[in-house]
Length: 114
Image 1 (cartoon, helix red, strand yellow):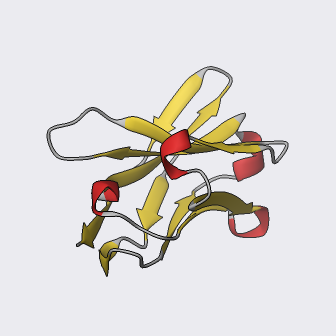
Image 2: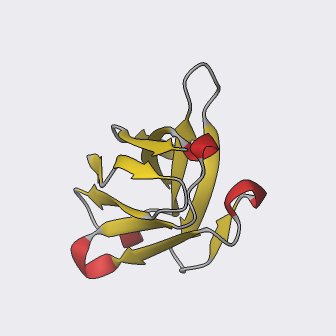
């Protein structure tokens, strides 16, 4: 399973970005998919999750600003990030879980300037 994240970049505080995670297999075959981030010197943290049934959840730190969605025809999961803050600066990566097996993609760097 290959997971390819893209869409990161440099943005000013208050700006928006949309990250994409394209899977090499049908995203509906996974129990859930999620976005995580890791800031320099910090541990990785879960940001948002979407189940194969389409239910979604985001962590409190990004609630109201970030939205996870998917396009199953494109085998792609998105993370829409609005009202970005400098503390959102991190490498963002996606992961997928299927029958107890976890897969992790490469990260895409998001830098938010103040």
